Image: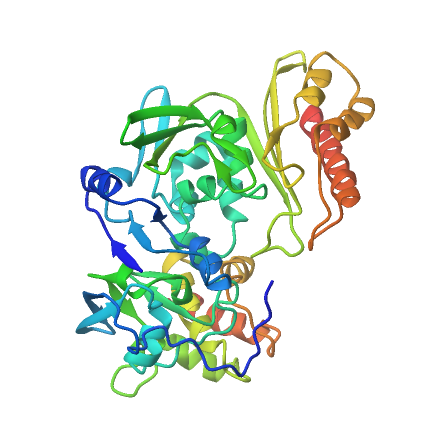
Length: 174
Length: 276
């Protein structure tokens, strides 16, 4: 595999230097309706981060292995690095920025704070959204189920225990 | 790059007529990383087939089950029909990547990608899945082992797509085994599915084994199963597996490890089935 130096400028595939055919899309992001013109090769992750300035979703591996770019697309967690912006015309998207209401964290976010689940924080937006998916998919998930369903999110600091604890707590409340 | 999202098979066929070198996009979980790794890869015309309703859904009839091309791995995992009739396919969905990928990756994508390590494939092979193809020249159906011809290669013409997968219902039991370097998000070092029936006298009524990551395509271990079928001892006939597989060294494992591990695990599981 080709090695990419970490400090090269991130691919801003949407750059307008070359005239590209653009496609108009309309979508809902965190409850807000948005219309936009995007080029076909713009990744959803880049659109969210650079055009919408929602920087909660992160890029790490860029190939769907790590889960740092996780967002919710039509009610399901997905890797936004593996989706093009044109593909989501008509879709409903929630990013980590859409969870809190009027500056108040939601239950999952609070649990992450209470359990000290965050160290460097880079993976956490994805972890929280996957946690939300887990409590949606399973009524009273076993600890092993939580671990299994978190397997698409990689964390290199915490050792996962406190993240699993946070999700377990919310799961047992609901 | 141009992007099209046809809303029916008819619209797709119009695109086939007016364009060459279309790149079909379903879940995108293999296409996009390949494209990002290799920008020289030409993706001039991208055709997103996700808006074609004919390709969606799992339908059960008296004799078989038809799985729409766009059915995601997570939809398969949640389907009671799949779990009830095809355990090996259900078990493969549980070990398939992680939730986010499973929400996007499609069954037809896993088949057309034609990876020797594709996790859904061994289960589809042992349940004799048939691929339904539609294109400018009409429709055709092909058994999965004839559909996939090599690493990343299928018989699909440039003006055809897979519309669905048909699997005959039966009372055959099946299971899936995967060895990866970790439990999730792992590409298989070796994987296989076994479909079997045992009669009341504890003899094989039927037996089929398909193994992945040990040859350019998933293969049936026919010599080995024939030997078992004719009553040979597992411990002896297991050596026949070496004549059928052609594993390679790669980043995940060596050829000799693959050969050793598939024989050991197969032997273990066959004995376990037999004892049951």
